[in-house]
Image 1 (tube, rainbow, N blue to C red):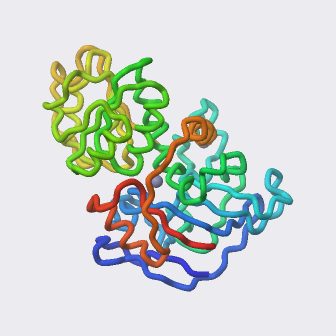
Image 2 (cartoon, helix red, strand yellow):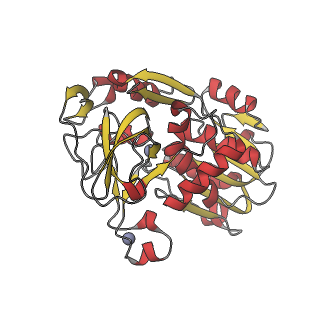
Length: 339
Ligand SMILES: [Zn+2]
Ligand SMILES: [Zn+2]
């Protein structure tokens, strides 16, 4: 099968992903093989390709926002037995032990034994992918408007954004500041508007500011200092640690800042009075649970969340990631793989 393979990490502008012919994967016990239709690109893929994350498996097929069709059902599968051809989604979280103290508290996203698709095992920048059926999401119930390309960005951008939104603890009718307006933020803006929050957007990219206003934001601008009011909650999407102090300052009393990224540059020193006093909270977000995914997909259908997508051929994965890195795309880049 064709795959975009990472053999050696490198700057995305040097096109480190190579189009290769690799062996068709065979599903093991409890696993499905899925024929990939589309795979959306994610900032985490960029971090993996450029070597910002540790424990690199090489060679590696990245990709963890996969929409495809069940192609082969491994031995011992129960949910998907006899379901060849069903439309399904595969996301970042690939497996957990199910027994540790975090799994038992409903925090499987923090399982020390968790493994990830497109990181520990090959992902969706390929014609086929194999994943444990317990971590494959049925997509049969999504309304028809959600074609494959418009579902895929929900599977990480939407999902991490959704968990970040929950962690941001926005009060009813509250004001939410989104810092950065890339693929995840533009989905969160739609969930937030559906829930009745006021949305404020900070982005240096003029086209992103314009898109935010078109999506119903109350304000979009460059600098926290220009915000017309304090906000109740904020989500930091930009992987830029130096934004933490000004965003904490922009929070009202009891405000919460939730950090959506998997990777963040260093945060400058904080001043307790200015940045944290009055019960402000600073929270990180780590992956997601399967329950988050099921709830997000239901709410996306109810809110008619519409990802903005830019399509690329599988072979153009380097360009898709480079365009994301340099903020040259609006919304999410999606690789067309099959069909
Ligand atoms: Zn666990
Ligand atoms: Zn992701």
